[in-house]
Image (cartoon, rainbow, N blue to C red; front, side, top):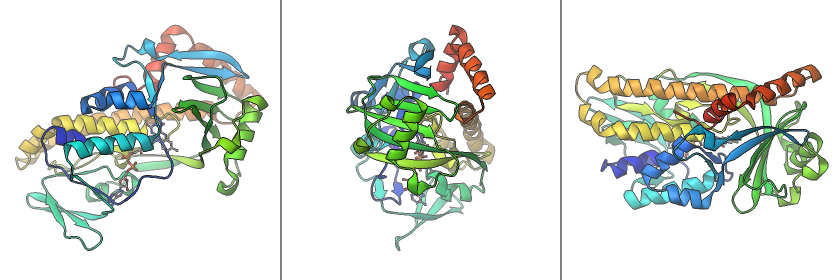
Amino acid sequence: MFFAAALAQRGIDVVVFDKRSRAHRHSRAIGIHPPSLAALGRLGVLDEIVVAGVRIDRGVLRIHGRERARLDFASTGAQLPFVVSLPQLETERILRTRLAELAPDALRTGVEVLRVGREAASVRLDLGGGLPSVRARMAVGADGLSGVVAAALGQRGAGRSYPYRYLMGDFADATGDGALAVLHLHPSGIVESFPLPAGRRRWVTHLPAGVGDESADAALLARLIAERIAPEAAPDPATATMSSAFGVRRRILSRMASDDGRLAVIGDAAHEVSPIGGQGMNLGWLDADALAERMPALLAALGSPPHDAASPLADLGRARLRSARAAARISEFNMTMGRPTSAAGFALRRAVVATASLPPLGRTLARAFTMHDR
Ligand SMILES: Cc1cc2nc3c(=O)[nH]c(=O)nc-3n(C[C@H](O)[C@H](O)[C@H](O)COP(=O)(O)OP(=O)(O)OC[C@H]3O[C@@H](n4cnc5c(N)ncnc54)[C@H](O)[C@@H]3O)c2cc1C
């Protein structure tokens, strides 16, 4: 929807097929980072996002309740030096509304793209539900992990599952931490907590090995928080509006576009990174923002000899995949710092935290966590 709205802003005809006919039940992403805020500004929805969300200016890291490090996002030098927390459901609603303003008939929900085929001077999309195929000058897959467009590109992507599972849930916020993002380090596993709008808070923690999805609920999350921080820190399970367990994976394609420039993939379709780091949704928007900006020139070059059409797109793809690999490294650092460890391992982690809180490194980390220069 971000990409389609950005194309419509440039006067480019666009149709979006989404096999879902209603929104996800659960909100996944919440953190919107400074480069995405700037991109949302170009799309004309920044004010709405900022008003609807919670502005986070800093994050702190605590060990046994004591603050050990602080990341100040003002130190990043970003034009909008803060993170906005807003449930993805709400962000998607805002983007859907913006797309409807710019191109009222663009979004076709409940329509599955079964296959993407090539024709001499176009791409053909075969649709489900007995609908006739459609042809377009170019097809861009923002189809997440399903990979219909990636398959047409001949790309599967190198992937791996990490041996970690996490439990997350949204609760009424009784912490008194307001708009602070807080990471609690504990030898049994990290606990993360982030503000949400309307006096709520998202909690995420490392799930002990052997816990099945059926017992990974809000009560277990509250119990793990009590054990890893303090009994009085635990949220009230009766106030939970969502809880869910999830595993984490990494899968990054080796290229994002076809040689003739007619097919491209963006977002999770091109790169799935672990949510522990909170950058997946943001990466997809930044792909979309960068691709939309170059789209008039790319469309004009279609049909020229392949190298003319493909080079700018191939360069863009390489740059975006570099960003995805950087995001994957950040999430791997977070997962390593947050997994269960021995007393000796925890002592080492404390030393890393002490170093990270020194001003020059603190600024570098704040930039990395807020996707500076992505
Ligand atoms: C628990 C969790 C927490 C997360 N937290 C964060 C966070 O804090 N910050 C962050 O940046 N990211 C986070 N993420 C990642 C983020 O949710 C994803 O990166 C983001 O949703 C990817 O967006 P997308 O549009 O690329 O793909 P998706 O959101 O997967 O959307 C793909 C769309 O394509 C449609 N589709 C698929 N196949 C077809 C087809 N064949 N035909 C038609 N339509 C099709 C689907 O219906 C869907 O609407 C989190 C993820 C999880 C699981």
